[in-house]
Length: 128
Image (cartoon, rainbow, N blue to C red; front, side, top):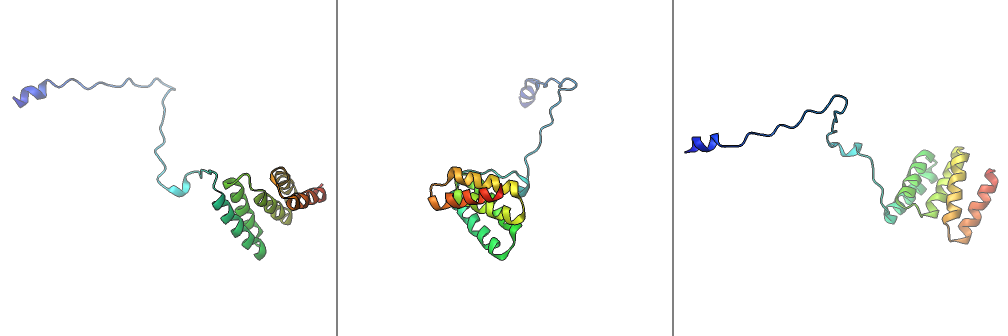
């Protein structure tokens, strides 16, 4: 009886072979988490943590590390005028005038505090 059931199974369907030039190679999912591209979603707490770490590096004179932290903060919270202002300051210290101008302009556009806006405008005038 089992022999009869085994013989009655339907044949397996064969998938059509892809035409020449239309082969799709699928990438396997990345196993190493550190190599996956980072996805940023709005997270003001993470942004503030990066600003605090950036302040530490800025005070120590480690400007590349501070620049990286402030840039991370602007990615976690693109509406953070404080992060853009501090990014502008560190870019200015590092001699990156173009980056400093862009950061201060973003700060002026985003800031609601009059003090921060006036300082950013002064720095922009200085960089022109």
